[in-house]
Length: 259
Image (cartoon, rainbow, N blue to C red; front, top):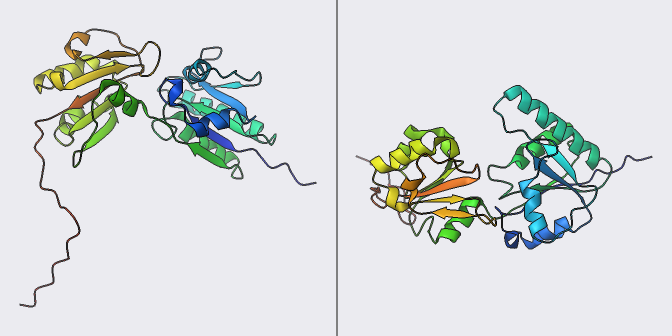
């Protein structure tokens, strides 16, 4: 008897919080009859990704399963958690049914799905993986605030604020717009840097973009000393950045000198 063909592992991007931003493709995957899996930080804790789907009016299947991804920098604890989540995912996939993993934001951008997919592939190379793209938090934040990430020849970069103030300071001179994700731990330090660089007026803070309790703060200096939500970011524009010369179009390679 031939072994059962495993189901597909599908990373369904849901956008950052507003269920209206769930794509038709992700919506179809959620309603396809596949089993759902969703991330939680602790067992029995609520899931932000699952909350997006619930706000969209979809009924959560009775057999939907939570996978625990703890918020810790302990490498050993993380490795164990990833192994458990991937092993359980493979068990479910080997039942022959597709498994849709709910992802807040975009599944290819700072997401747990990429790592989960790699570990699942390592355990079960026969499993097919599909990634459904979605709206990222920074794209939604730019739209919500009316700011533009980049125009024409402008540049922008997206980094976790955890890279630290020296890196952020350097990148402010290299990009017209800088998106700083997960700013909570370093918010005061970043605000002090922006004050020194005279960039407070061209910065904007967004918390839980797209969610019912979304918050936009344009007077970012007033955030000093405040404890903000983990799901927060800063959009920083540097209109005074000095740009180098652009090379437009294709240029012919110079002929070697025969002299």
